[in-house]
Image (cartoon, rainbow over all chains, first blue to last red; front, side, top):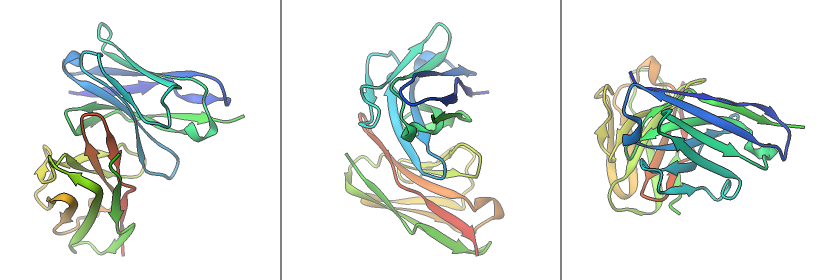
Length: 116
Length: 108
């Protein structure tokens, strides 16, 4: 069955970096585009970034453009989110999402806490 | 950027009642790229409706979506205990993706 499993979250100080991973299984990874979506504690959903199936196109939300980078390794069926210059307001659960237009599968999320 | 505004913020209803949730877009979503998701506490969201009115796989028919242009509605015909949760609408496009702020459906 389709599975998306995020990892790499944790507690990090402001200004530091973190890389999230999302391991995919149960489907042909190269067929799909993927997004990262986050949810701050007690808040709603915020779209962050997308990568096209062939990796050629990436878009970012204004809130993370220039600080976050999405990438994929098709040989490992894995999606990444490199997060630099982290801020307290980046504290959230980060979800990896498979997209077929709408989001048909979500990972369970990984919590990133930015705190001094 | 398309802004989605959901109303009401909270809906207090009893099991068996009908729920009507609204999602209004700041500009017309001409291709009905509008989806609805349900999120229960501690869980990831789950796709309910896409294309404004198409139920996702496995979604019961008490859930229905309608609307076009800038005004969209999610209707739950008879609330079951497991339906009390937060609902989000989403515009999915080719270069922008946005969510509404959510509507919480709570037990009255």
